[in-house]
Amino acid sequence: MARILVVDDDRHIRDVVVFALRKEGFSTCEAADGAAALEGVEKEKPDLVVLDVMMPELDGVEVCRRLRASSAVPVIFLSSKDGEVDRIIGLELGGDDYVVKPFSPRELVARVKAVLRRRAEGGNGAAAPVAEGEPPPHRLLVRGGLSLDLDAHVASWDGAALTLTATEFAMLKALAERPGKVFSRDNLMDLAYDDRRYVSDRTIDSHVRRIRAKLAAAGGAPIETVHGVGYKLVIAR
Image (tube, rainbow, N blue to C red; front, side, top):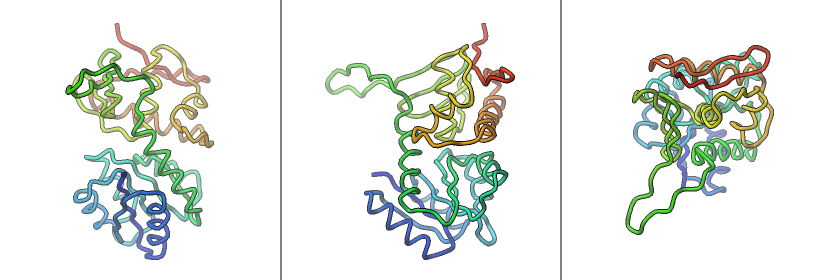
């Protein structure tokens, strides 16, 4: 049972979201402000955070920024702002999705399920047979210095861990599965967003930019831009 931390300074909104999530079988915990949200992530170890953007003192943007310093827990932003710039800022900070108020509780639950599904699946290949009593082996995807543990949902470059969101991991996995293939933004959208909803090219570029920055911090630069087409993963010889 996945545990969801719901963060909003509006008690009514928290009640609505918690009710909808529990109805679908999720376990929940709550926080009424940014400081409590950070404490809640540390204490409750949630599988996903539903995070309001507009909160007094410590807003959702700053909460996400601090979380991303040490955690890859999926984050879905809730916001009363609907501008593309606001969405891009949220995704640049490491958010996995962005839901605008007023929202449908059913839509939010569907978004939660989609993000968790991306995190849980990691890959599509069948697991190898396992002898009775032995722990199942993890499926590893290795491309040069890049290593993706598809079961643990862990990525690294030359042994240095990469803190990726669920969406970032899904995109990097897609590129790594077919090195050298050029993926258009539409290709990456279809592979990373399994609920098949539309996201803008700028959103995809934002995710790729964040992935590149994390790889660069670990000493890697395997993603190339093919201008006018998309992106590809290149393995150094």
